[in-house]
Length: 307
Length: 307
Image (cartoon, rainbow over all chains, first blue to last red; front, side):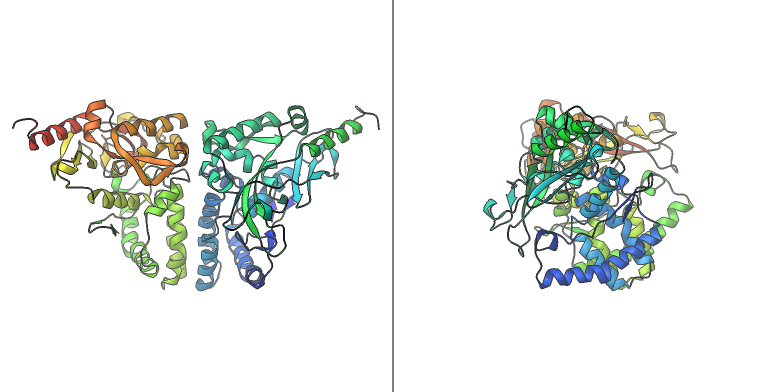
């Protein structure tokens, strides 16, 4: 549970299972279910107790620090997961957990460089929900995909979704898989790009190109390109590669439509058949049609275009 | 203790105390001594037991990974310390340590982003000792400073030291201190630059400029400059910012003398008076005179210059 302590809203996430054969990418065999039961019965209560000892944990400083350590906090969370691990290890031991169980929890987290991802997503959701519902605003507050459609929400258009077919991601595939195996783009994780990290902060994570393709120069160019479609730059999330300037943040649907530049997303790739799991990772773009639909709706709402 | 498992040699280091008022920067008050006694009586034996459970720990992969996470493994060790922490946490608990003591050890390590530094130094020393003693070689195998003199050793000149006065480092000072307080350059840590990391890998650590001064562009330019004085690039230590090319490694004293480009060193700054400790950090250069002295000695030895 992630609370926006400057506001009223709260966001939620489950805990990260790892890569490969995991439920969120469609795998559901005995090993997957056993891991989920262990996470529910053992991992989650222990983390809950550790967080009570800590009195909660501020997430923005962890994200900000990780952006200075080669993460973009969507597809690369190696630093953020390590920083979280360091913060939780002591409290896990001081909250009455059995040392052997604590060791197994720590070892699970230590070997999952994506453990922070779900927490990053919930943090971004909490930040963006605070910006939702401003009359007339063309700020994008959600980008999400379900393997069939890609949808966005905009601050000034309430609960309406503006959708288009989800693209297939052309990325780097795990051994034995190709683009033929890929499901169309899938998942909630594009909330990170919506908040100005993930693909928008790719300049901070040159090593991610080994996971999603391209060169470190491409990573820097991608971040720079995103400034053309954002309302500004982030005050807390700064990128060393931009000489410590803020990450491009706050997607303006009008600027997307005006420039034709669509938001970049670093993402995992699921197999198109249920039961297999993640098969790769890559870079994709949000479909332009979503933003055109959103701006047309906003224009009608404020009577720029008659109904 | 760091063993070169491809050879015969072994290197040693104490464990890192942290920054500020610490013995290695000249502080020796009651708090310093109490911490050292705790490190000797509690921390070191517990880590020893954890390493026995682990069966040892490979250091080159940790250094290589940290170079992809914004460290240069001399003055910035945030990622490497986190990676080490993750590897040690489970074994610390599985080796019979009391959980409350284990928690205090983990908390000490979690709050010291330089914990890996001393281990990095011993790893570099083990690598370089393996290259020492090659007849006729102008490879630099040691750079060290003692607050008065700066000295180097070269592979082909045995145990001889070639020295010059140690420079005063013009860096960033902790609040309340200035260059007037600084001792001349001091310590063994330039062994990291000698091995091709530290200042030589500064391109990998853009965020370090907040600690030692300069801009991320300077960091990249520094690494590029060092290629003019090295025999090659490192096979294992690659830098995303060089498109995953190897770090400049293997300082050739002849190239230093030929080009006048001297090795760069990222370093901490000690107060010139005993008892105070670290007062800043910055970038310095090895004195050219050391390299001229070494090359003259080698030239005499191989009869290029008569005695």
